[in-house]
Image 1 (cartoon, rainbow, N blue to C red):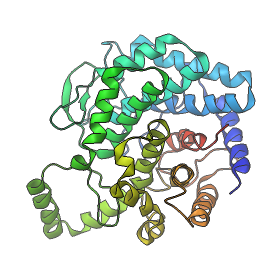
Image 2 (cartoon, helix red, strand yellow; image 1 turned 45 degrees about the vertical axis):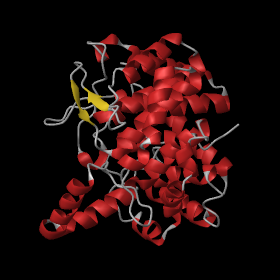
Image 3 (cartoon, rainbow, N blue to C red; image 1 turned 135 degrees about the horizontal axis):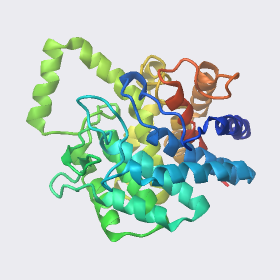
Image 4 (tube, rainbow, N blue to C red; image 1 turned 90 degrees about the horizontal axis):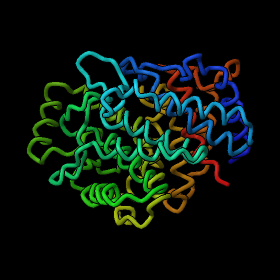
Length: 358
């Protein structure tokens, strides 16, 4: 597996992206792929901070440093948080503006990466405040959503949103210790088996568990009334599986001593990537290469868990090759080909950056 070749491609895409910072100092927004929810520039700007930060570490090119400063200053703008609560991440009638927990997790992730370069302590205040204003349910061991105006909404019932928010918490802890954040993140993991739905072969469910009776009724109603939705949901879960294992891998790199990582359930989740079901269906899922970047996510998972994915290197390499061939636009030097949302898919290049170590 030629990581140097991938690094060259990554840097070429980062150099091309420097020309996309507009006069307002943010990166182009998208519409959340296949969901077509109009998003603000917050998400993609946060994503690009991570890529520019890695590019700066790799090249020491001052242009990347200047781009990081511009993007951080945009996210620090009080107009984005007039109530000093959460960021407005999307504008879709009938949906929350915070984009659940995931919208805020992406902001924290980007700001933390920027902090590692510029060492602006105001960033630490922002990310800690943003994380802690989300109420944590002592009963369910999960977080509530919070609107930009401060309204507390229900628990976010999408598992990958909860997981990525926990990852954001661990990334804060990796920079600065906070007892409350640590307690909540570890509590989430201590109860994860009570909230995580996993199929017999290891595929992670989209929704968290809502109780045995409720989940049973919901599943069987779909089997009877909406048979096509079961197949649709399976393909959706296939498309998001490596999105989950990417987050697990990032957390593992920070807190490998978490007990859940030593369980058979976790092993089964990681090994699902090497399963026949995943290998066949990842190419067919509309939430695969058209939206998520499975090549980058599977690579990150493989590099972290080689002992669980023995003999999978050829598949990982073939997945990456397909990802590049199918989605990389050589004219634009970005991953904008055959995707739902060019701006967001281009920004998700940052998920490749975490595979480059020093």
